[in-house]
Image 1 (cartoon, helix red, strand yellow):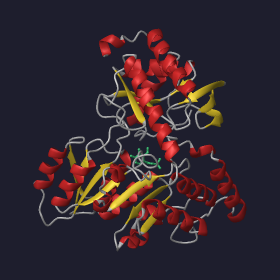
Image 2 (cartoon, rainbow, N blue to C red):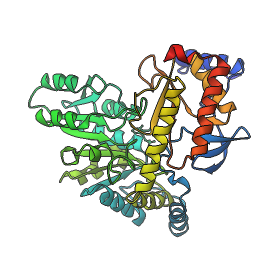
Image 3 (tube, protein in one colour):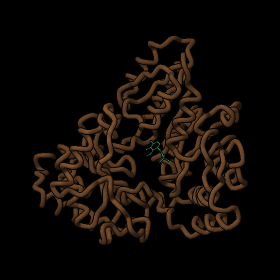
Length: 409
Ligand SMILES: Cc1ncc(COP(=O)(O)O)c(C=O)c1O
């Protein structure tokens, strides 16, 4: 036994650890311990020895197995090595990082693009650097953890408005000192319920109050808007949005984060943004694969169409089977199946896995208070057969654990 100090700093997590252990002791499968021993395609993997359809991977456009994306990564790995061993600000900027930023500039039609090591770090860095002590960040209550963490790191005053409420945003902006620096942060698609922001109205309100606007398009890049530039493109507000944050870990199919902008002073961020400066840059293979994927996503109307067809079919199928969903119609490629409590969510999650379907188990604090979800994300590469199999699995799993869907509906 290790002799623990009297004031064990991990003791504050005893309740969390105990709850998990009790669930595992009762024979439950661990929703945060899933291992994919083989990945067969963008929509299939081997989990616990069983071929499973994946519907919780954010691999919206199915780019992970694209031959051009893989070839670009292989070539860069051979040419530049496995990693950069350095910060973007020192020895960690290779030609492939610049090429990736060029691809982003072309994709978004912006003058500037800055690649970070993850989307989390992009939000952490950009939010904390833009909004410091004495400034105000005005954000949706349901904002992603990386946005909240960026606020905490920057020490700005944080003002939250009710999720997707234009009225509440206007009210709260109206109470702030006119001369103060203000950054309104929105997300194109909110990742828990899969609903989209009323960007046109919100951006207009932010502008009317003299605020700068940042939109996180993590879950919208690739398939919203004619060119896949996101909800900002679809809503026609690109000219009034100062900063777009995104990630490579969803539609692009790799890993990494970015910020694009037309702000004339944008490049100074490379000198002052700590989560950009004080971390190693992405491996050359990752940025080369990302650039190849971004360029393909510029010309992917068929994939966009297939993804919307799949999403609408899944949403309609789940609704027809009496499940309560996060949005009345399919607003994005995320479909949130709302569950009554944690125990039912876990039972349903496990029952689906036993039927060869993987979805995300989601609970607070990732979700809003008291909300338990089975979160499904569609892929352009899901086949009609896979969608039918998933729907049958949902029906069978609900029957097996005794969910009364008529009561829920
Ligand atoms: C809205 C939003 N922003 C940022 C991120 C962080 O992205 P990454 O996985 O690249 O760190 C996520 C990830 O889930 C997200 O949902």
